[in-house]
Image 1 (spheres, rainbow, N blue to C red):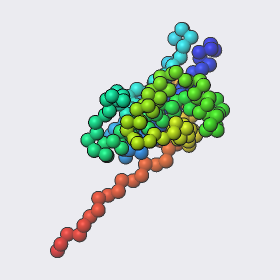
Image 2 (spheres, helix red, strand yellow):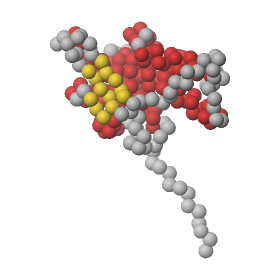
Image 3 (cartoon, rainbow, N blue to C red):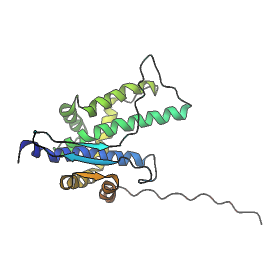
Image 4 (cartoon, rainbow, N blue to C red):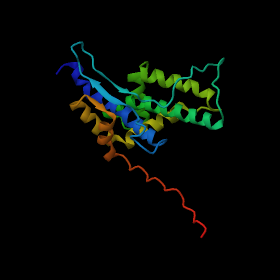
Length: 209
């Protein structure tokens, strides 16, 4: 087995971390997994002879960059719009960090602080951390006081640890079939996730006789 192939299980857990986080966070907003999928596909790429392997979760995203700076602040329709953007931004940060944090858990770092330090040391400067830090910087325009970075790390660690069996199941399938569409991934992880709450039927008012 070449060196790159040895890293493939790590890559699989990394991408599974992103994918499971996307599903879990998506469920906090929407009550239908398939009507509005959390992503389109999750894939890993074995070494093609150049010593590299990698992966990607396509179509995932809660928050789109608005290019906010100190000179150009975003315009909100109302407070609800601001709150929605704020929550989506925090969810996007957690989803970005979930991949590196899943790597740490796979390597045996199960304490949230150790997990965060290992994830940062191994991924600082990566696109995951670059995106997370950029969005964290924009949070100051979306809310009066940003949550501490450590609080977001703790939330990410808890999500990864609480859903570790789902991440492991998805990673195992990725190592066999390197590309999974959303419906396939959801079928794999759903048994490891809490059941979706039943939809509350609309209240019926008695009609006058």
